[in-house]
Image 1 (tube, rainbow, N blue to C red):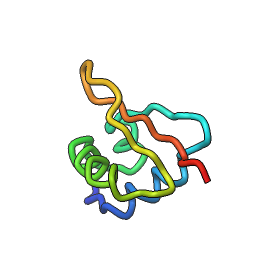
Image 2: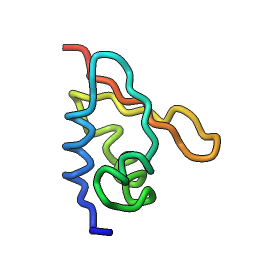
Image 3: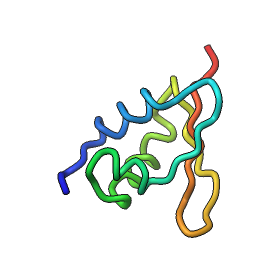
Image 4: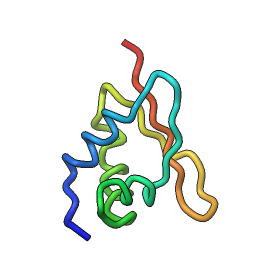
Length: 74
């Protein structure tokens, strides 16, 4: 498992976001980026208010948090 950077999570979110909402879990993103879900979730929380081009919302919390990701309107 490699160390993940905030920039790697940001790039993943920006490239994954679409006009329609996408629902992801930190463990899915972590699997793609070869990192830990805990580190990914921490960066997602930080990026929630920082990304203007992408909306990130904490959506559900059953076994793990689901994140709703969507491109912001232009």
